[in-house]
Image (tube, rainbow, N blue to C red):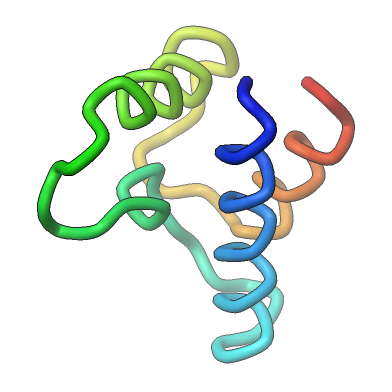
Length: 72
């Protein structure tokens, strides 16, 4: 996963957790604007989420952050 996407995921997870608590869930769409302005990065996140880790549509933000920080 490219570094810019990794950083964005961590930032969004931190923001969601600080606003809504440790139990907040999110999908990979949370890392993108409503307008699909970077389809390659969206597909990279979707592939990581769905193909690599076989995650559910919604997952806990802390879980996603831990996966990204571990380099998984």
